[in-house]
Amino acid sequence: MYEFIRDLKDIYTHSEPKPYIQTYTAISGILSDDMNYLRGRFCHSADLTVREIRLSGINAAVISIDNMIDKQVLAEGIMTPLMKYDFRDKIAEQCYNEIKYKVLYTADMVELGSYEEVEKQIMSGFAVIAIEGCKKMLGAGIQGYASRGISEPESDVVQRGSKEGFVESVRVNMSMLRRRIKNPSLYFETMVIGDVSRTEICICYLKGTASEEIVDELKRRLKSIDINTVLTSGYLVPFLEEKNDFSFFSGIGVSERPDTVCGKITEGRIAVLVDGVPSVLIVPYLFAEYFQTLDDYSNRAYFATFTRLLKYCAFFISMLLPGVYVALGTFDPEMFPTLMLNKIAGSIGATPLSLMSETILIQFVYEMMREAGLRMPQPLGYAVSIVGGLVVGDTAINAGLIGAPTLMVVAITSISSYVIPNLYAPSAILRLIFTFAGGFLGIWGIAIILCVVLVNICGKNSFGVPYTTPITPFSAVAMRDVIIRAGWKILSKKTAKVQNLPGADVK
Figure 1 (cartoon, rainbow, N blue to C red):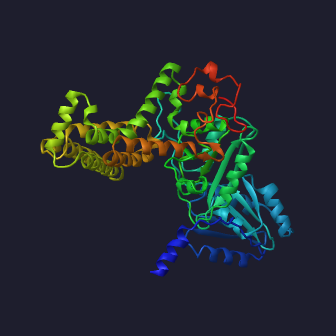
Figure 2 (figure 1 turned 60 degrees about the horizontal axis):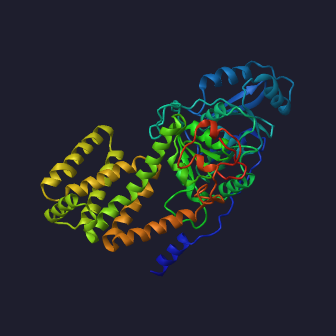
Figure 3 (figure 1 turned 30 degrees about the vertical axis):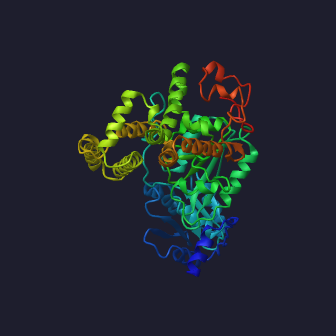
């Protein structure tokens, strides 16, 4: 028991993360030793390909990973020129320089001086050339691994915008950002995170627009991440959040659209691209940005304002409606209109459960249906939706298990929660908390929990920027793109820092 408590203490005790220090082992220059070392590092894996050749009497080797390179480019662009060129009467260093400056014509070439660099490059789709007696190796980029084509993101759809979404290749994602912001100040910086996975991470921002303090802080947090594997961007989010942050809402934004990310970058934000992930992290991220979409800036200002107000209403409905319904039905039924009160009283009297238990039960059943629909194959997902509609619909009401008003309240709440998909997770949990508070404490419980949530949001920071900017601290100029959306003739005026970020300009 003592060991169990000690292990829990070690797991959950917060400690300062130690920066990851990469060690490098120099290349020996003896070809046989180098090849044996690399084969041992890869545990003699079947996909490690070592093609030994002779360059006019000098032993050499071409190292690559199978299915990570374009074999046709390897044969025609590397092997054929190497075998045809005359290296007679040249030492190892001369052969290396001849290959680098005269023989190969590939655009992407890197000089490698350590085994760790060689391992990284061949696992990134490079072919590495090693020469007997040379303590350097030459990497040529001939990537040819299969990747998904650019398509419209399924979870972030717009009506009047680009149909391109991020893909799994970080290099392709970088090119999509560069194509939209043709500015030499757009800066990319790569680093590797993960002791085992060695995942490539790229940060992107506009120099002179993004705050240097925020950029330095982001780099510090990324370099201090001590983790073995990074498979999704969600692995990094807890390390990028503020210390001792217990909020339901995240200060790290996520987007699958390059046009959205470019818009944030021009406002002074920083994008974090993760190799193998078709989405990008955005820092810092403010609460008001959850209610902004690209369609807001494609439509007329009056309609964009209407839809934005609709989103704010939908958020509060998805979070508060079940709790308020339970609180009024349990403690203050006289606040309902007379006709509605008769219906609600009749449904409560006809069902075996209390109003709070009934509401929570329907919410749990809905969440199970939603999860089943997401995880099951698509044909079975349709079956789940049909069965769920029958079970939680008319059949359950006729059987007297649930009441029609309660089902209607949960249905409206569920529809409202999908108006802002990025806020679904916090609203789902808060919805249950407000339901319990309304069932046990009434409308006063709702008020107390709501005050706690508002204080939590107002006290939250994202990389030193207040989370509720520009509402608190208030900025009259910035309010033209928060609750209402002003026209482009007003938004385009560069008169102030809209998001109140250091170095951030207006749209």
